[in-house]
Image (tube, rainbow, N blue to C red):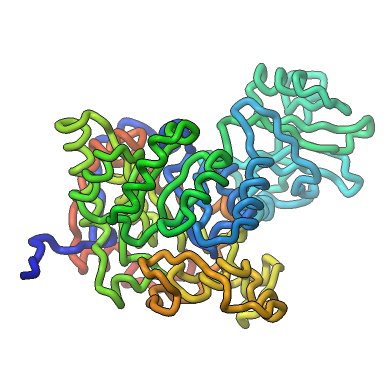
Length: 510
């Protein structure tokens, strides 16, 4: 006879975080986290989605300290391209990075216009140059401490001028290519940037000192035929691998894990399994030696697993059950801490913060799909494709369980053109994510749609992080580990959630 669980599937959106005694200013809160040898500036993974991850996303997310996960369902040549481009973009802490032809502003530009430029392109360093490209100074945008002047203030009044005979201003070098000299100046003077100019003071490039290791990347692997070949081909080129299945609770997942842990080449590389939604499955995979788990099912914005099949669970229920099992496993069972990643159903910054009160990392698709760097096609207000940023209104998205994902797996993102030129359409195979051995016997468990465009990744991530840091600070914590220990979460009534929205007012600016 079927059993009825005594629990109720609950959503992240139903909960709020109570305040604690503030011990750390928001700007001092750290969101850094790690996954074995992988060190991240943000506790984020990109979802393993075709519409999200391509070379542009890997580079942008990786440079900002976010872990990119290559979708299992891309062609091998597309996976290799992402890996190659990402590896070229890798930087180590202490490396010197050069920026050629940077975004710049004219001396007559206002502070407001420059800040809008920063938010549009995601560059926090804007050189101020006249129409002859002569460098006058540099504006460095710090969102935690913006200039306390009116927005119409000329940028020349708030920029950092070039250093003259005195020690004030920003240092610069003339025609230098000596990285040791550049690094010495940046380190000794604790500067973020160093302009390189020619004899006529025309800007050539800007040197940056890298503050953290960048561009960690992972690969999702299938659980059907060919998984060993995938691991052997790509495993040495990525920082982590993970199984990608809507439900990873089957024997083949354990066989793949065993292969990884017995491999001389891969056994020390973090290996994850996903997805799961119950504590008993956490323990099974933890006992088998998994390095991390990915949790969630049925609640993704493009997913129909829950609505059509009836499989799944509310993310708040998943969070609390797995977090409790993680602590029991670490303190009373094995003594080994097994982190888990929450995947799906995270729509707002508030939900991101609630999730991080329990989960070690969060995996997001809808969030990253909205950025300029996402793989999905950009659309204007009339749903026509466009590459002009000012015209972009939305970005295409689709679920891995939709037939479009199978076409992309065979023919690539430009599958329409490929199909038109390929007489063998229908004869090739695409690996299946949702447990079906053939495409003809599968069910459609994803949708095709579009999400609202938000702009470049960097300024959006930085803005949202400020909200998260403020919440963590107000909860009495200074980092994610203490936040998970100190946070007090409370369920809110629907009326309370409505009351917390702007109300009884006509909003004219948000």
